[in-house]
Length: 443
Image (cartoon, rainbow, N blue to C red; front, top):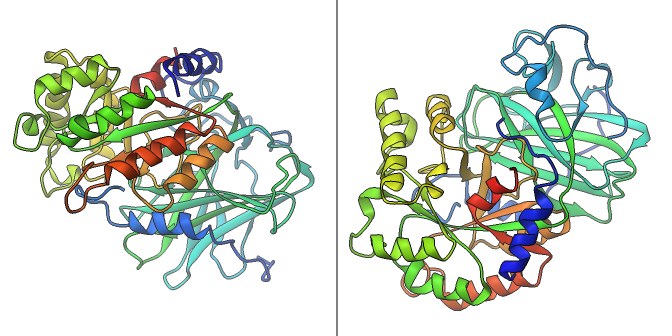
């Protein structure tokens, strides 16, 4: 992609108006995702600092006052429109043998009611569905959903559109790595396609929750406000380089320059200038070439939530200040989650100090985004990487590829393979963007 194409992406996307924020049927089985997608999701099951880390028909709206932190006014500023508000669950059915769905009046995201979906230990997943006899037209749409899962650090969410039947399915799957026990919006990226779904004729929507990481215990999650938003004209790819490694400058930079692509460097302040790490001069040269130098606190072997509240705030604040004080104000607006897991306290600080945040998600993301602080990444070296780039191109979504060491050496991503991946991206109908590009398109 040329720099002209990159500017065209920003111009076209800025017109979309993105938010600036935040039982029966025993014979029906949940469809498995493609082998490639399953492989990537499994490879990211244990978030690790050293891993590649990997609408036409609507439900009736309630006249009740919203009983949640999310006001009706705030919903009005989200991109797209609500297609399911979960105020009336009469049309929703729990899949036979796979948990149940009940009304929830006390814990809602918007309006007066959400849906609580549960399954006991020993049941593989918790799932619910509803049908549309006249069909639902979701052609040219991307989806987002409000979700709250409890009782575990990680969760696996899938939404499926049967269009028109179980032989023609579009699947959206996302690995959630926090915060647990808190509402979040998930911008659902396509990860698998069965046959040829006709999105002008969606006959059924399924919502499926699975355990992730810890396979024991019950499954419990709430959902609310399923929204559809018009797709942009083109999909996008973001190249995220983690850990402030010197090879991002000595090897990857030369190759990205061949294609005119920007990168995003996750900067650990304490690592700058150390052996095998980027120097400040190298960071400035990358910045001059259109890369973003973004904040990535150093937490060592610990997860961010294992620090005290004061320490979490300090790590996040000081990492941002380091970048700002060295002239990287644009990059300092963005945050990369160390070791991927995050909990509610740290999330509040991230929202306070940063405009955008990334962590492992295992699939592409919907654009326009309904929550720029919940952008999912996946390993740029995984077996499903090209598949997810293809999905982003086909469905006009955002694929965030995450890399560590590039070049020679044990565990490094070979530079020839890296160039071949960029050649694959260059052949697709996508723009390669920086983190700041994603914010500027919202202006």
